Length: 423
Image 1 (cartoon, rainbow, N blue to C red):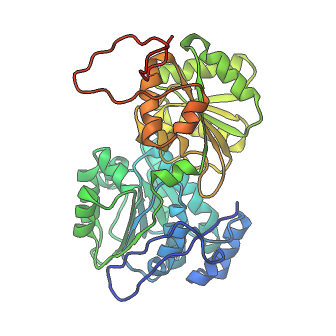
Image 2: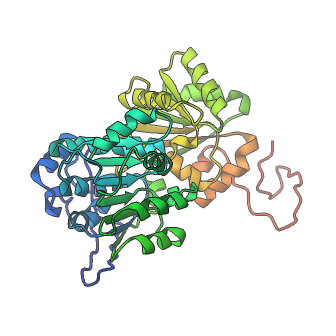
Image 3: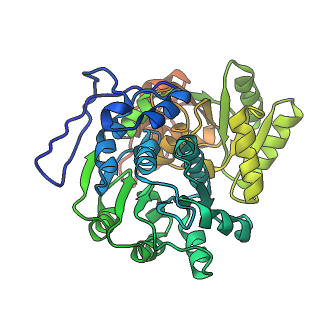
């Protein structure tokens, strides 16, 4: 994978610095060595095909390697994991006694993903990495975590290990909150506060989030010291623009046939989103019966089954994964070329998170959404908010115009000027 980069404005006259990425690149991509990354780590990244830094990495790396507290606003898929993983690997030395770096993540899937990203570069420093999350045996997990230099954890399981005195956090000198907004949305604020209060006060703290306002901002103000603030202008519109979007008008009874047609076309790894756990299992079973290499992923599965499904998908052993929205955040695989919304997302934010599993970090990808007559209005509103009018229209669909408050539905004939399509 090659990384592209764009220029950034980086004033240095204040301890509270805001760096903003312009929309267009104005200088060649910068190599990691330019930001103080050592040759062994640069070489380890190059072995993965990563030779130049993304915008968020350009902004964060120097300050993070220097030990500064960092607040970084950047969406998922922008390369933020390496923005904190590389500095941590650069700053730590192996100890084997108890963790000296802690990364908090909102979900098991994200914790697992971050762990794998760390291992690719931690090995060159002989640093041990361990993941801590629920759904697996606590004893072996605690044993690995105790010996690790870097622990990536979900808040609930981490507090469980600490309460049982299976893990110490008193030697942690670098702490990262990854997807802090998501963690707080999921109700982890009390747990996160408890964990941060346990850590040594002279630690380095880095917070990565899609927003730095509201509760996230208050958390940062309390638990960081003289932070450097970096922001990348890569809002949902940029993420949506990075992918190709198609809407497919289809009757409810013909959705499965339409899906088979899409899967028979030229594609790479394909992620299919459905609404329910039962729907994921049923659709995966039906596709498997038709000869597709397919797995399922949802919150009702045991953790080892979820990891097995992700492993088979990441390796290409299964090139189709049917999932609920549990996979819409934190799943970052290079070769997902297609995301298919078999069941439409609830709103535009859910759409962005789902389709954002492809077209990540400079790569291309395609998002396909099935639109039944019953869901046309709902999907139309999503397309309108995300300015996908042309793509919606190419499917022969028309967006509903806003109706005056209290207006009643009434039939339209072909000669009428209403926006609803005659059936």
